[in-house]
Image (cartoon, rainbow, N blue to C red; front, side, top):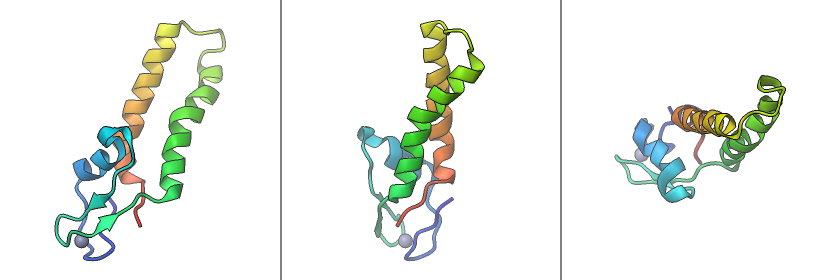
Amino acid sequence: MQKCLNCRKEFKYTQVLYSIVGQFKWQNVSCNYCGRNHKITLFSKFLISTSIIAFPIVMIQYIFPDPPLFAVALLWFAAWVVMLLAISPYFIKFK
Ligand SMILES: [Zn+2]
């Protein structure tokens, strides 16, 4: 998990997760200990956005060679987004 760049204390999982999904826009994370604000780096935003959109589009062609049922594809996509958001606090970076 990412640490505060100022005081080196580790951010909480929920704190980082909220910065990604909170109100469906990118939020700053402020440190609970020293109060410093951290922005998600452009690369992390790019990585998450690309993973959410591009990866399923590529994968769906391999997993479902025939045109999948819309409901199945939607479920699969929803599961992917939830999983990605759940693990994202472990790989996103702040500045
Ligand atoms: Zn701090």
